[in-house]
Length: 68
Image 1: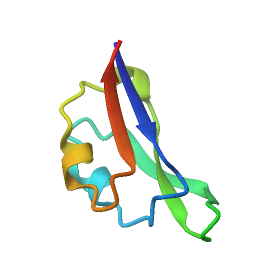
Image 2 (image 1 turned 90 degrees about the vertical axis):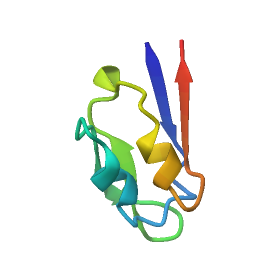
Image 3 (image 1 turned 180 degrees about the vertical axis):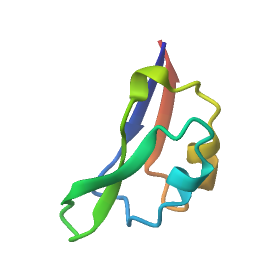
Image 4 (image 1 turned 90 degrees about the horizontal axis):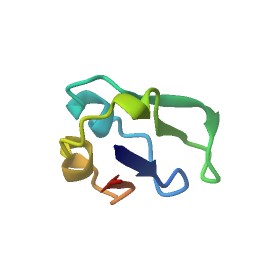
């Protein structure tokens, strides 16, 4: 099982992770973070394959991936 964590208050909403996800499991939230930005979030994290592409492309190190 893959655990995907996104630090919403570090995210600037660049959407690079969303574009990089081959499974299309990420999207922008409908809520704002403390900086007034729509942040990336996992839409269906239970089906994440753990490829790490979102982690690699994130310029602000907002994403953590763990295997449980």
